[in-house]
Amino acid sequence: MTPDRAPWVRPGAAFLLAASGLTAELAWTRLAGRLFVGEAAFVVVALAVAGLAVGAAIGAARPAALRPAGTATAAFLAGAALAVGTAVALAAAGAGGTAATIALAAPAFVALGLAFAGLFAADPGRAPIIYRADLLGAAVGAAASLPLLGTLG
Image (cartoon, rainbow, N blue to C red; front, side, top):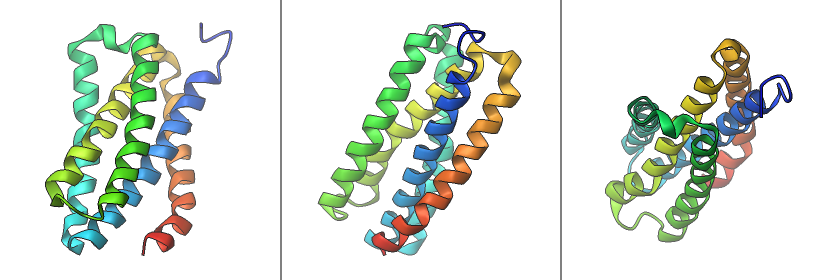
């Protein structure tokens, strides 16, 4: 699909990835703080940032992963890993400690980093529009997280 045919696809994907990624990051931060100690929450923030960077680095090292099929696969894997990882973490109620939390959350953030890198690499001329959608999605994700945070305690 060329950017001319559907100019909203990449910004829309960036919006959805950012909204779901930030919502998950905030939920994981709250879970880490509740299940372990408050200071453990910083691990999730660091993990999210590092995961995004590692995913982008994978894309830089393996440009084929940035093609549309690779980007779509990374976005799908990110969504699946966020859902499954969060469900398992809630069900396990902290069993396995911080190491288990890292093992459950890391794949999602790496996949998000690869998906974002693919979106930007596919249409560098529209990077400011894609980035704007990314930031707007993160803002919506943060606002949508407020009721979730109350539920998680």
